[in-house]
Image (cartoon, rainbow, N blue to C red; front, side, top):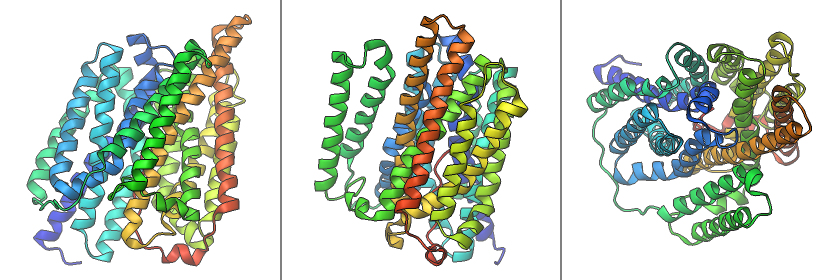
Length: 482
C-alpha cells in the first residue's frame, strides 16, 4: 500500500475515531468497578444502583440505529462531533454529580451521545477505507479497540477510584473528548448530508420508553409489590408502547428496525440469543463487582485486577482466534460452544461461598467467561448478518447490537431484583448481611447461567450455517460494547 500523505492522513483519522470509540467502550466497564463507592457516597439502594448502568444502556441501545440514520441524513462528521460533544458534557455532569438524580440523568445523556458516536464512527471508517485490504485492516484495529477497551476500563476504573474518587472515572473523559474533537476537525473533511430520507423518531421514542418503563417496574417491584397497581400499570404501559413500536415499524416508510429481518431464521435466532447472552453478561459484570467488594472485601483496584484475566482473554480471542475458529468450524458450533463455556463460568460463580478465595472461587469462573465471550461474540454478529445481502449488513449488525444492549438492560434489572429479593428473605430469616448478600448474588449468577445455556441451545437447534458460508461472508460487522 503506497504511503502517501492522504494515506497517512486516513490512518491518523482512524486512530482518532478509535480513540473516540474507546472512550465510549470504557464507559460500559469502568463504572462497574466504582459501583459500590457510588452506592455508598450517594446513598443508592442495591436495586436503584442498577440505574447508574441501565440509564446509559437504555439510551445507548435505544438510539444506536437512530444515530446511524442521523449521520446519513445530516452528515457523518457533523453528527460524530455532535455526539462527542453530548458525551463529553454529560461526562462532566456525571463527574460533578452530588445527587442520585443528576448522575442518572447525566448517564442517560452519555448513552445518547455514545450511540451517535458509535454508529457514525463505523460509517466514517467505511468511507475512509474503500479498498478491501485497507478496510479489513481498519476494521481489525477498530474491533481490537472495542474488545480491549473492557480490559482498560476495569483497570482504569480501579486505579482512579482507589487513588482519587469515583468522580474521576467520568472526568477523565474531558481531555480525551476535547482532543478527539480537535483532531477530528483537522483530519476528517466535511461531508455532504443526504436530505432525501426521513427519521423514525416515533420508533426510537416508543421502544426506548417501553424498555425504560419495563426496567423501572422490575427495579421497583420488590418494594412496591409485584401485583401492586403501580407495578402492573407500568408493565401494562410498557407493553402498549412496545405494541405501538411494532405497529410503527410495520407501517413507516423508513423503519428504525425493519420487521422483515426477523423473518430470516439466523437473524431472529442471533437476536434472541443476543438478548439472553447480554442479560447474563451484564448481570455478571454488575453483580460480581458487588460480590467482590461487599462480600469478599476487595477494594476498587483489586476488583479491577480480578476482572483483568477475563477481559484480556476476550480481547485476544476476539482479535484473531475467533475468526480462525469460525473459518474452520462455521458459526453454529463456536457460537454454541462459547455460550456453553460461559454458562459453566457463571455456574461456578453461583457456588462462590461467603468466605471465597480468588484462586479457587473467582479466577476459574473469570477465565471461562473470558473464553466463552471471546469465542461466541463474533459468531453471534456474523450469524445476525448471514441471511442478508451486503447492502443490509450494517443494518442487521445495528439491530443485533441494539438487541444486545436492550437485553442487557432488562436482564440486569430482572437479575438484580431477584438477588435483592433473595437477600431480603435471608435477612428476615436471621442470616448475616454478608451471607444474605452472597445468597442473593448466587441466585442471580444461577439465573444468568440459565440464560447463557438457553442461548447455547438456541444456537445448536436453530442456527444453520456452514463453514463455507461463513468464509464467504465478507461484510464487516459492527462491534457491540462489552
